[in-house]
Image 1: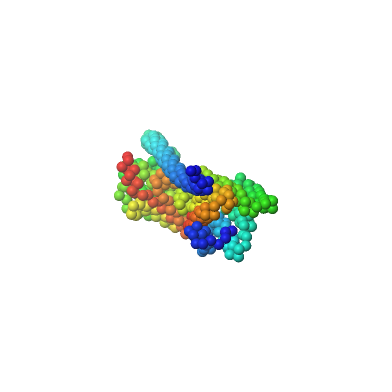
Image 2: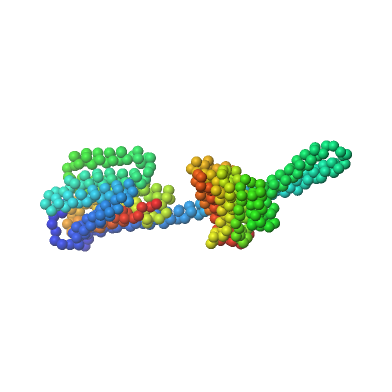
Length: 270
Length: 219
């Protein structure tokens, strides 16, 4: 006996409704799973791009430092030595030429002495040999001493550094400090004291450069010259964080926080 | 719409279907200040539904016909959903199409209401057309979710839950609306069962809307 039409139709309609609901639920589940997969792939791609950008940045800075070292060494060993030799020869000439022209010889000797000092200073600024020979602490002491003697501000240095970072990171940190000190010397109008400190704070090593000068309003500051861009690049290369506090007439305080855990990891990789 | 019936599970479900709507309305009013503009359209939809339910039940209690409310409710529901998804999709093309969608559907409802010989049959056709259009809106939303990948946790996204609820409701109900008039003449018992299923889908939709209104705003 054939089933009544009513029962057949009711099963058909119910099946159609259930099928549509299952289709809808299936579609949504597929959407959720597929979206999560796409998100994961996007994150992986972004992480790979960032890693590549960091590697590129590190390679660029390394190339820059290599060139600086080469030029600094050539200046010191080449031109510096040549000028020093010329100074000696002038002194010998002064002794050989009888009487007279003493003033002229003194002037020439002074000019050559200045040239030797300038060459040494430029060579040291280009590449701090103290850092490679004696480490970051000594390099910062030397930088503070030279800046204190030559610059308009008194420089006070506080150091508590146990040599945690590899050489490339120490060099990057030194460059940041050098740039910050130069900026303070140039732009901190009315400042009398510049404090530089390098101290560990938990899992983080903090470099702080602060002055009691005129300060600046970040909103009105132009987007940044080469110096600030170089600081920014090195901060990114170190995986560090830059904290800046400044306001007009309230001095400036800039801190760089470097995670020492990542330093020990990169040290292990080398 | 339906004459008084002795107690049954189907009748209980149909009577209880208003509960999630009241819940959604209460949550929406409680969180009114924290709701973004998108979800305020949703609250307006809940308000329209509650108002229609109230008027419809009052008329039913007085044994008066209430089917005439269907075209007004359908037009209002579709209009609010289009405005809601316009805010969500943020597409210039959809913005240009919105007046045509609203105007076109509104005109269709008006013309067909005036010309339709049978209000019951007309209401079912309206709901089928609305279902197809809303499913199209949902397709656009899900496509945007996959293309833009701006939402990291779908389960925390209110519009995901709204769209899920709408998808299940309209996918499930499109067949019910298609055969609703056929069922009336065929079997009263089966007719009640099918409308009970509709009531369950209705409750699922408004539970999803309640959840969407309750979720905290994404920063």
